[in-house]
Image (cartoon, rainbow, N blue to C red; front, side):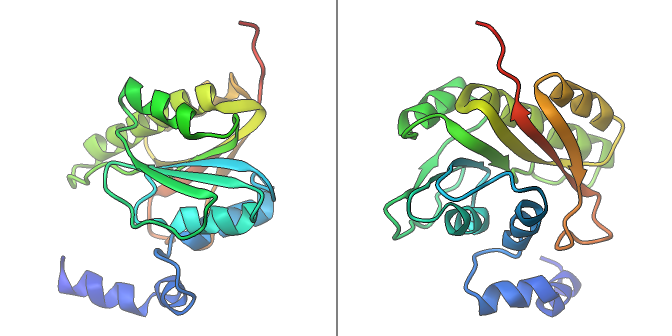
Length: 205
């Protein structure tokens, strides 16, 4: 890890805030800010968090849904367990069909929200990283379409680039409302954006 990057991170407001408030990641505040503005997760909801390690979004979602909700965190890496009985974690590859089956098996009912902060291993080659990020977002969408209840919500990380508009158009086929979101906690110089799909359209089987 470059020393300059480490120094910059330690000076970062949200990094320090996360340490002080005992959240596992500064990304926690991205979800808090987005939910505060758009209300796509509520008390009592069932939430699936894809790409959940180290667990910052799980913590945020758990705080929002309260004791009557349920949060499932999914990642390729092991996530340090949570003490709350209504939080579960599992190791799974969101690009594999069996992961979807495992997710559905864990849930007490269809999810109210599927959220994804999943990222690829960054190569430094922009076109490659953008394409990989969009691919992960599409894999997350596949899971969302199966795991969400009718009128459920989907919130997913993307990178800016030439494939983004097609992905947004795809979401518009499935959700009544689609928004591009840039939370304040997302670094201004970052090309990271989040796409929010609200109110899944129920289709006839």
